[in-house]
Length: 74
Image (cartoon, rainbow, N blue to C red; front, side, top):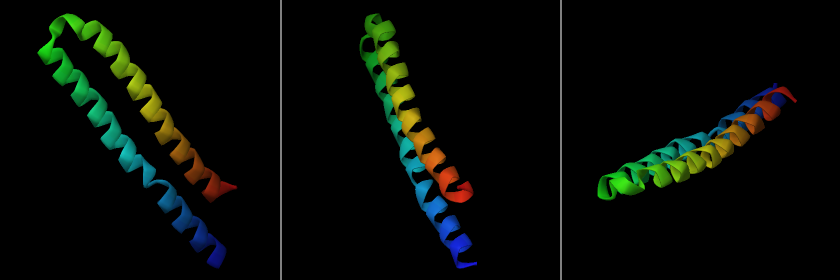
């Protein structure tokens, strides 16, 4: 009973990182939109950087989710 409660609390704490990921993705694409609005000719290069930033930020979210599942089911 106590171990199950501790697992649920630990998994909940591990998912806190997902809130930061959502914020990070918003910041990445906000920077892309602002950069494209200021200099439309750089839009293609900025889009490449935005997709790279999105992928790296999303990877952190997947690691946090994986840790939550490992805590729950391992």
